[in-house]
Image 1: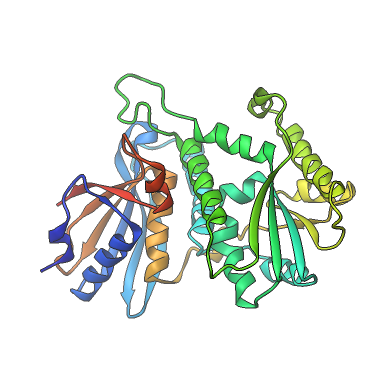
Image 2: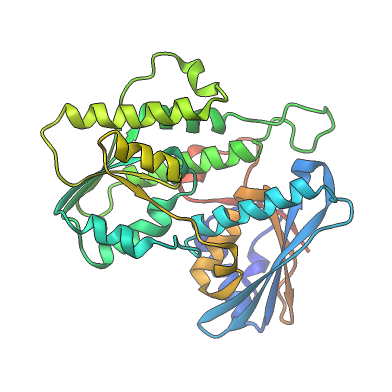
Length: 338
């Protein structure tokens, strides 16, 4: 009996169960998965075709095949979603930063390390999706503290609260917008970093600094927030007796350069070019992560299969009553199954 026979529309499933469903479909003869993403954020009923994933033994071969519906003809919005795909691939751990070897070389120079995190690093979940595996593959450093400035957490909280407010017939009224979804995903990242894990010895996180005026994070002057993030990290370093092995990590080149000019060594995580991850091979577990992160970007995905008994199914990232534990466990809702 197919594993899909055990689930129904409306069920809330964990990433482990989703992996079991995908593995079952592959073992039952599915050759290709076609993945489409919903565009309800734009009030478009049709789906955008994102990629094809081909069964190739232990690994899966994927290729991006962006095909936009005619109804979604705004070039700026198309370009925006295409650009966001890079962040999706980073969060899924498929795309890695172009200068990652250089970053790891710098971090291994010291046994004990303190790393200040910029907001963009947490929004792209670059610590758990990219850096953690690299850190523990070589068992260095002995101890690492990720210091999160209060402005950073406030920025993330502000994003996490962004919801659809209208029109009244919007299918996701009251649901998180794109910023809301990535904000809540970043909070999930922080919860994951804060979790005790025997496979990550010597890792800890700490929130540093104060937030005197909550409205400051709502300003459109990003340069001010960037400056305050760096300032809070530098003040923290001056308050402790720790002078070597301290870095400020960001995906913003200017922010890293400013950090260096102000006295705190900066590490720039350079995002990969789009061509570097347009196609490739991924594990089945990475495919599950990819589906989850596509749900973060678009709100929901539809998966169709070629050959085999696997049905078409649609997954959503949000539903009324979603709990913190659902985020911790990366759960999704089966919206449609046919």
